[in-house]
Image (cartoon, rainbow, N blue to C red; front, side):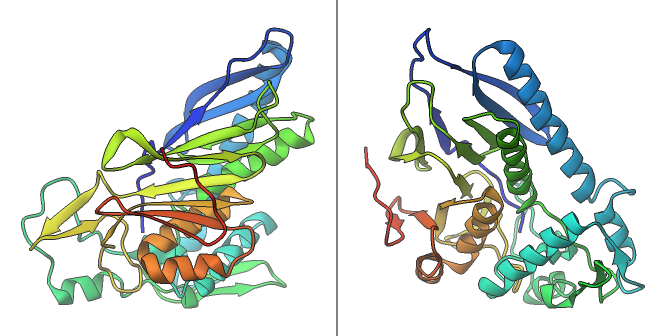
Length: 328
């Protein structure tokens, strides 16, 4: 259930008058991905202080959720799978609890235990034939959010099966963007954007008073935008499969894999989700890819303050019920 966040979201910044506050941004690598942190403040000294706060918070979260760091709480949960529960911080417990709630909401299309999945699909051009049905079924034998056991009184997490693992690749950067935004708001930064490799969380407005604006790029022609939308205080996340895929017997298989079946998703090139928090938008973008256009939009339409844009492999655009887009 890994995903490649393509450069589908293009930030459109207006020219800032000299007398107003200004936009300052910094590009850097965090959590193994490209981040851009933008703040609207009066000068570069204030900008540096604010951006450093955000960097420290994102780094803290990476240490909390990393499955590569053997000393992280996540690694301790994984190494004790099938052995014993592991007591964790309230923060990590809450993140796992919310992830399980999203799994329930999406009928398992989203599942942080996807990390248990055997990597039988290769999207680097080396695959020459489809895996067998038996290999595919076996690849997800240890996946199942129902086997993540939470104990609220002890704030402990237990993976029932040996070999199970959890990972936050489809939710972690969104969560980090949310926490960085909240910290900056707490420190009186009135506007900005945390762009976590395409998981974008905004607040406030541009220095000239205009709303922040995002363009949704058409994956069939990356030089053109399929739609332009304003976003003032919320998150937008795009999942795309137009670069990482394999094709067998005329069917295009995306690198976003259904954790319930082990088969890659088909038929969709990109999913963009708008939500109050990047954590939720992150998880739902992947989920809609797996659920497909009809079921995915139906589920999104049942959720308050959530909107979605889907582009299928023919370039056709589908939207949830309450979204208005400017097509260009």
